[in-house]
Image 1 (cartoon, rainbow, N blue to C red):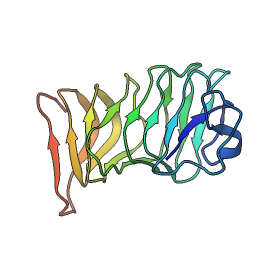
Image 2: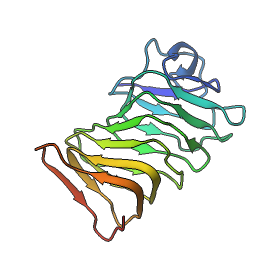
Image 3: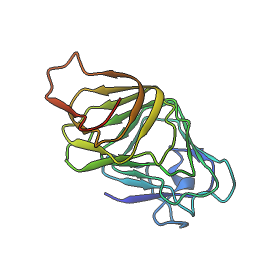
Image 4: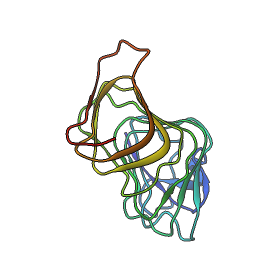
Length: 183
């Protein structure tokens, strides 16, 4: 596993030689796109210009995806599928206008989802792994369907404002723990 740091403003996820650095703000690049074992980071050294976009142009994989501390209001864009095998953290200073499906595929417990108030605009979040995920804050995803096909989701007392919730057509063990949450 390795850490991948986005640099160089706008670009495609698949363009590892120009955007996926080995260190924050670094100039040494990875020789392949991130895999399910690799964590990806978007931070204060990722975007020097306002309103730049990271476009998911291929089926993308990562362990954790973290946008903490990003500057210049970047955008996660594209429509190809995104597979996350760990946690997801958005930042209030970014836009998640991504139109593809996100597949949460963790096989381990202790994963978190933090949106930091960002409105989710993609059409489907699929919980597919055998692990678990805990919402750290409210989810605003009025055009998004949550599909619980495997594993455990802890709503953790957060408000989930979603279009639809589905959990059927599978015999996989799965649990949706609402606690004091409202949907």
